[in-house]
Amino acid sequence: MENKILIVDDAIFMRMIIKEALSKSGYNNLIEANDGEEACNIFKYEKPDLMLLDITMPKKDGLEVLREIKKLDSSAKVVMCSAIGQENMIVEAIKLGALDFIVKPFKTETLVKVVDNALK
Image (cartoon, rainbow, N blue to C red):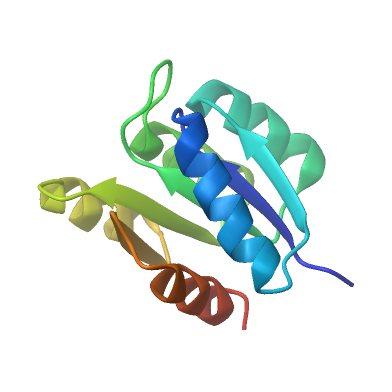
């Protein structure tokens, strides 16, 4: 069965970059959400194998979404995406159960490696 990945970022260009990188690496079951609220709703119905979650977003930030997702499914696999300078939020996300994090801007190889490791 193909891994389903939910890409959550309020910036459409970031979602496009992530989708393109993952598609080229053989990941084709990709779903998008443009804010935290939409991410929570999609997660409930789609039950993705992995969520790539931006920290800074409107409506619900990544930490709020992570808390909510972990209440729904404590085994949910979540990788946080953050900008440089958000170290405190990354530490908090790891404490809340995030598997890993990627700092933007990132190299395609780094993204794919983190996704591969998360889905092992």
